[in-house]
Amino acid sequence: MIVAKTGADHIKSLKDGRTVYIDGKLVEDVTEHPAFRNVVRSSAALYDFQAQPENIEWMTFQPEGSNKRVNRAWQMPRSYDEMVQRRKALQAWAKLSCGFMGRSPDHVASALAGQRISIEVFQKHSPDRAKAFVDYYDWATRNDVFLTYVIINPQAERTKDWSAQSDDLVARIVDEDSSGITIRGAKMLGTSSIMANEVLVANLQPLRPGEEDLAFSCALPMNTKGIRVLSRKSYEASAVSVFDNPLSSQFDENDALMFFDDVKVPWDRLFVYRDTDMARAQFHDTFGHSYQNYQAQIRLSVKIKFLVGVAHRLTEAIGTTKIPSVSEKLGYLAAQASMVEAMLSGMEASGRMAGDYWVPNKHFMYAAQVLTQDLYPQVVNAIRDLSGGAMIMLPSSIADFTDPVLKKIIHTTQRAASMEPEDKVKFLKAAWDAVGSEFGSRHTQYEMFYAGARFVTAGHSFRTYDWETATGLVDGLLNTYQLKDELDALAR
Ligand SMILES: Cc1cc2nc3c(=O)[nH]c(=O)nc-3n(C[C@H](O)[C@H](O)[C@H](O)COP(=O)(O)OP(=O)(O)OC[C@H]3O[C@@H](n4cnc5c(N)ncnc54)[C@H](O)[C@@H]3O)c2cc1C
Image (cartoon, rainbow, N blue to C red; front, side, top):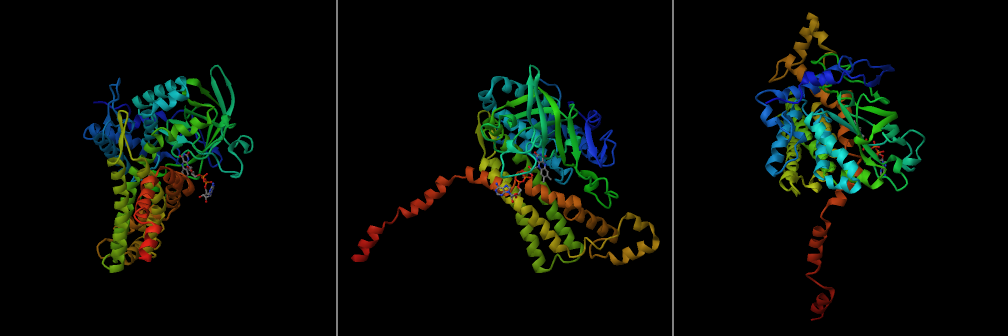
């Protein structure tokens, strides 16, 4: 059994001359730059993990027509059992970063798998676009391509339509010829774009008729001429050491503004063309949105479990676990973590066949999304609440351990009933990186917004809920008595 790519192959594929900027400079090689090199290695480690002989069978599958195995994210499950098998592979990848790599390669692969399941939606739009999508899906699957996506427009004036924003703010079609279209303008944030091979560019936000220039979707190699990637501040670059910042030093997947500076898109990479309804339908009339957000919940199930573990260890570090009000808080956190897991199982078990494939329960997925975007900051806050000053009273860096006087003081002051002082410092540094560092704080923002602001996610929940049954229950009660009968009874 051989895999389509290894970690080394992935790193090599990123030395492709892409145009990434950070701190005012063009990055020569993202795989070597101090802002990105560790997370690039963490992404490569995903491919190495699945290539290990003991993992290859359950982490990967062999697509039809290929002799190489790829991650199960590309697999369109044909039954509930296959969906569970696929989920276990995705959870295993998430565990490698404790759930802190939100846009690992399985995210967009899941979106595309969900869209591929409903290819008839593309066929209705245009047979040529549907063919381009199918060919692309097959190619991306066979090569286990790492894709990111940019599907949200930069914020500016919300009271104006997207097409009415100032010139070049929102990516749009500005030209076309026999070889394809040309796009110019920006998309908000390409998380993981610095270490992805390709980017899916689309428009998830509602468009009106007349905004056809904005209504396109395509996939492009990250080194396409004209794609400029403007990285946010790197947390990895300021992570002093793995011991001091175990998460941000390895898993800072980065988020970057993407500007399309007259980028040429060939027709065979174009999946939606000047159709405002299809821009929406690509995600919502297919199972794309379901599958991408189902993947997000799979990853979150790991991350919440990790955070609940942090909470428990924290109380051990400061000796509070057995205080009744503290164990009550831990019990509440455990219930929250289990709720995330239970919702995941629920959306799988109450899924259904759509044609040849098993798809998750859409409303349960949206319910999980709405509840967990609130739950995440609650869990972070609970950890802060349990900690007092523990995550702050810490050596400035590992360098403090090199001075014998300081080391002695650290050993005296970092005591715990069940931990050695060095283990306590090690743990508390990790806990702070998870919930309090700039990296940890970005994660709260991520979990609150990656799937859309509250009014958007709650809107999906509203639209997909079975209101008829709910209101039917109310009507059922109301139909058991009538005012007239009651008045008659009163008169008797
Ligand atoms: C860390 C991070 C990573 C991200 N990664 C990606 C990525 O990889 N790819 C990608 O495409 N996108 C990405 N995003 C973008 C993300 O999808 C958006 O942030 C999200 O959809 C919310 O859109 P917005 O930022 O425009 O916020 P807005 O929609 O502007 O909402 C912000 C706030 O404004 C208010 N508001 C605005 N409009 C309304 C309204 N109509 N009704 C009521 N209230 C309103 C609400 O208070 C809302 O909470 C990422 C975002 C973050 C924070």
